[in-house]
Amino acid sequence: MSRSVLVTGGNRGIGLAIARAFADAGDKVAITYRSGEPPAGFLAVRCDITDSEQVEQAYKEIEEKHGPVEVLVANAGITKDQLLMRMSEEDFVSVLDTNLTGTFRVVKRANRAMLRAKKGRVVLISSVVGLLGSAGQANYAASKAGLVGFARSLARELGSRNITFNVVAPGFVHTDMTQALTEEQRTSILAQVPAGRYAQPEEIAAAVRFLASDDASYITGAVIPVDGGLGMGH
Ligand code: NDP
Image (cartoon, rainbow, N blue to C red; front, top):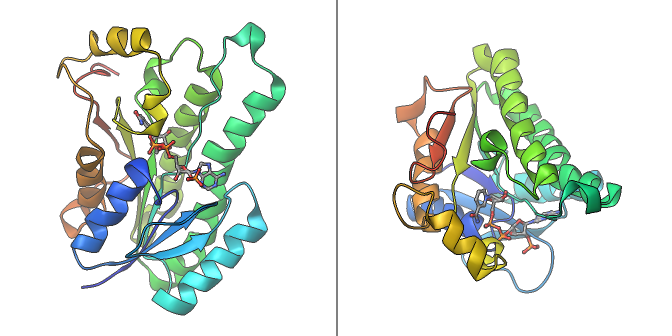
């Protein structure tokens, strides 16, 4: 059965791997992008998730072309790392506005049709640092921890409506985001990962696809780590 799937930030990195995993399984996949040329093979809609009007327009286009979104993967996210003393309020607020409030915007809009359809799957991409904490990433870690409370509240609010809300918490993954780390940061992170390596984006996509599948029908409010053991115990 071909479902209408939306992956925010599906134009590159983990989001693109997730979009490909759903498309390979035969789903109709829409992705958001902000600029440049989006990858071929998807319904690409221009949308900045910090702007409610753009979110509304993106949903209208997807609904017209693919029908109401049945599976939403809220993946778009940014980092603006800095130690607390040097972190500007703007850097704090903008990371929260994209990672947490941006997720609120897309989830709220998706929910309308999911309630009507009496089914839906929502997967939020958090991070291992949401629960572990990370020096220099107070804004990012707070936004990612916030996603857990958000998903679990919605799981309680809407659990009886056949809509599941789950969180995937990746460890360190080969993408542009981790490419920005220094060699020294990369070495020290790797030393803490029991698996002894970074993840490939496809390994995150596999967990997301499972949570959106029929096999995961009784899983809601869960936080699934895909982190090579980095976050064990949290
Ligand atoms: P990338 O930096 O490679 O990609 C980020 C994606 O988010 C891009 O598609 C980008 O779109 C999109 N995006 C950012 N801001 C906005 C916005 N305001 N509106 C719409 N789209 C936006 O990141 P990754 O693929 O590495 O990360 C994907 C998710 O996984 C993020 O939420 C990240 O926090 C999380 N994660 C990543 C880890 C890693 O090790 N890489 C580890 C744990 C979690 P555009 O191309 O337009 O900029």
